[in-house]
Image (cartoon, rainbow, N blue to C red):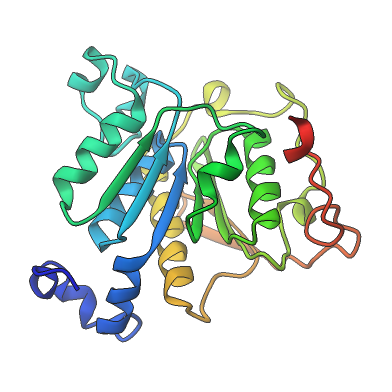
Length: 256
């Protein structure tokens, strides 16, 4: 472990689920956060504070004023400087924990780019706000046998789901992404800023469980009513005819 691990991580080293061996695994782990707006900034911050050794943060957009009420890392100075989110995120993460290697990537995540972006990590985190991109993540992670953690927020609600390479996957839940413009978004329904912290924290916990090889990885699809403090779980089963995790057909990845 790093020199200051005994004090920096003292409170998590005494957790039975982590301990010294678990902390070594965390420090050796490599993750990618795809999208570092609201959810992604929360996830990246928490994993950095936990000591995950390598964090790649990927986003093509600049920090905007509307990001500040729901993004945990950004400031008005980032907005004024027209900083890319990936760069602003990386600067903050390095200030939080100098032991963590942060790789900022200012790039569009597309069928042509995604495999290279996640090929050398062990866990992928969904910080996006785009349903079609999530189906692309689902395809690429299954093809490369990478576990990933989906998360979403809208209004005062959120959801998360841990997807293992063997399935069930996102397409077992919904076989196809809704057509663009046919579903509500944060832009049309708004978003409660604190809900991003709730969902992002649960995604970060799932990532740690995957890194640690824990048997306690959440199974199923979880929906959160953040306003009324309620969580519901759907017991998701693998679709025996799923094009992705059963038949290995990557409709979204093959759109290049």
